[in-house]
Figure 1 (cartoon, rainbow, N blue to C red):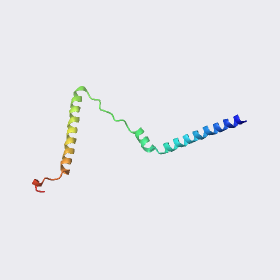
Figure 2: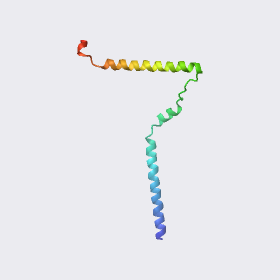
Figure 3: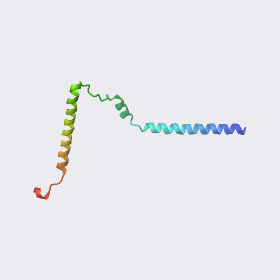
Figure 4: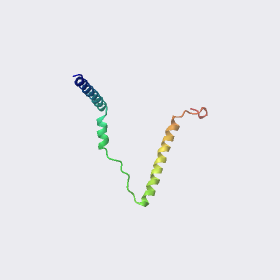
Length: 90
């Protein structure tokens, strides 16, 4: 009789731990921003252009020029935020 009661207690203990784990999993899944996950899954992948060998060099040069232009714009913005020197008369 005592063995049966002990087994029932172990079974109820296992069920309790399982229910606690399931509740924790449900709580964790409810915190996930599912709308953002679905939007990310439906987003189209970024496709790099398939260029011929002659155009790859031109495209690489274009990318370098665009990067340089962006860096110049960032440098201009940084210079405009700097305070004026006393000798500049501002």
